[in-house]
Image (cartoon, rainbow, N blue to C red):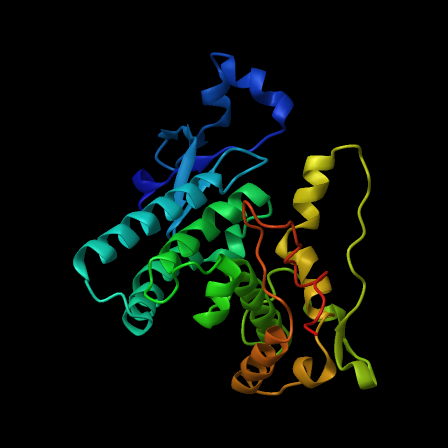
Amino acid sequence: LHESKFQVLSYGLKRSALLKELPFYAEVSAYCTTSGDLIYPSTDVRDLGVQLSTDPERPFSLHISQSTRRASLLSGWVFSVFRDRSPGVMLTLYKALIRPILEYCCLVWSPTSTGEIQAIKNVQRCFTRRVSGMEGADYWERLRKLNLMSLQRRRQRYALIQIWKTYHGLVPDSTGLRPDFDYEGKLGVRLQKSPKFINNGDKKRANQLFNSFGVQAYSLWNKLPAEVNSCLTLESFKSSLGKFLDSFHDRPPTRGYPVIGNDLVKANRKG
């Protein structure tokens, strides 16, 4: 290991902000290497392509803002270089170059605040508005015409695929879900023992925990019918999941449009 390349992030309660102003804080929170060198805490660190910050309430806000900025700049480049604005060409470029930036490791940093959800969504919204044939169509209609999922719905799809892989032992059970799987006949494979919360008066931290993957996994997975959650192969699961998701309205929160919840857990089917 190259200790000189190490970086340290120090997390603490919000009330400890005053402690950081003390002259000895850096020495106390620093990491001492085997050679005796001190590595002082950083305010943000990039690890495997994900930007982490020491803000306990919004640890991935910097990553989200940087990702949306990169994707927006690349969108501008696409429209400045390619004259063909047909859906086939534009969607190929969008899916190959831009959308991967907005979805890389999204299970780790998936946003929960409306502001961050809209910031990511605005990249796709602005891109689709400039595709030929989309003139005059609102964002929800453009998604339908271009056969695109909202980015919020795609993140929920990724979460469900990760849960399926966890159940079948294809990925490490990092959130401890596997012991809670149980087969319930007509309901198929279900997740039991949804985590309970202790109300200590800190609403922000309670909301962060509630919106975390380890907690949301229970509600998302139990939304699936038996014909979906009981699939034995990944390809059949993805196919069945796609058909199931298509049966729900996909109307992400958009400024200037009626406020309609797009959370799959609370969504109603079409028709």
